[in-house]
Image (cartoon, rainbow over all chains, first blue to last red; front, side):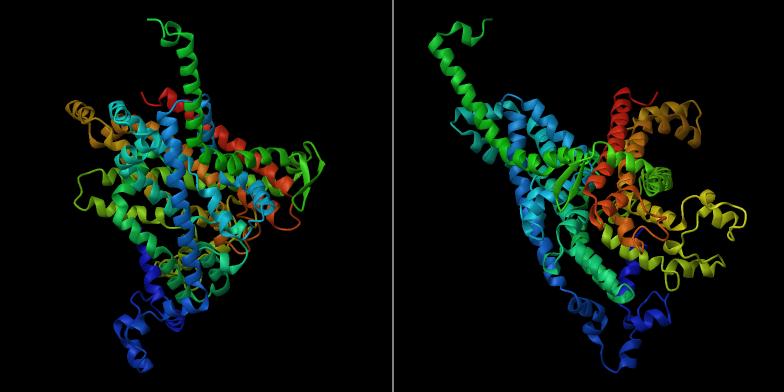
Length: 269
Length: 331
């Protein structure tokens, strides 16, 4: 399972010449130290990471990273706010049509992305949002699944706690903000992880909604880079490593939580 | 006990009602942000997709009602049917392998292994990796000349196929590579499509393993002990205890994998060149939709009709899943 990743990293550390001459050597020459001697000096860290430096210079990866991080954080903020408010209302407040509305929300979860892509494209175009952050952020500031998760959790918090807080004079919002949210940290972390992974990896939507290089998120940037530089495998693998590294690091730190909540929820990309 | 309203004075009842209305209005405010976004960017587009499929659309404007015209033309379009067939082949190629491989690994991992956490982490890495990176990595591995897979096959003195560039069907390649007597339609899925199916299976494996592991851990140990006392061997344990109890999980994985495989797009778009190639042999349904909707001469109406067909297929699968989940598949 990890072999493809190891192969990716190993290739990323090798020069194009080396790759075409001896395609299947696993350890790159720079690690063996042979390239330093042959090239007469281009050694050290810059030598090892030559492909990374070059890939970074060939395409605006800094910009791609920036875009992706902005989009991920904005979506995250939106998802947390909208989910907390809606989940609170669905779990704890009473209003007419609550069940019907919740069902409507849930049913949206079933509809595959390609189905609403075309009309969304027209809508975004009409709004004049094509090729802007708004197109990539606003529609994704709500995640029905997160609302569902949080609502389930809110329902498990004992009613006594509310009654006590209400008697103490806490307003509805204060109950949500000062009692429910702190008690839901684990769920909120899960939602945040899913949101970040989701926005980091989303492809079809930004592909359709952006066209200028400055607006490209990382995934689209990488895809474009692979179309342009596809034959330069060392560069490609360096760029790919760069694009997956932040998320893999995040995953390694949070893997227990990610795996556990995926197993219990049955969520799939 | 009489309700508060009927026993209280009319004045109090009125105040209670007013207060409840105000409460309801306040509660709606909490739902409002989520509702607004969901209505604008999910509900309305879905309804619109339905409506658009009955219209001719040019430059984002409706220019004429065509009734079921798009659907009729869709049914007459051989490329559409081909894409349906390709999608079905893709599912057949991914779903069963995904189920058996992930069940196998889940059973292995379900013992008390030392580095269990490490294994789970490793299997799950492809799941959190984006499709673009997966596609780029695998294109390199499957590269016919320099790729590591063909190098290994060469070491074993096996054939070195063109993988993603091979439009011939796998049955044809296995039985009749020259294509002298096996007709083209009997070639089955192209090797390119099979390659995509394998990559897709690799990517999703960890997820399915985790689902199966969760299922396995819910099996009560007494069941095993009882069976063991009755003299059951490990195969019999699996056959008569694990498998029946796991069948709802298996069915869940089956339906979910099928639904996901029907929505495959990125993999085709990113890994084949030209996308959907070679010779249209990897043009799956969503790719056909994308093609109709976004490459000139774009017909958003027709794309919407495809979207609706896709929606109905997935809705059907979801309903089957719900119905059977209620009935519980095991025992």
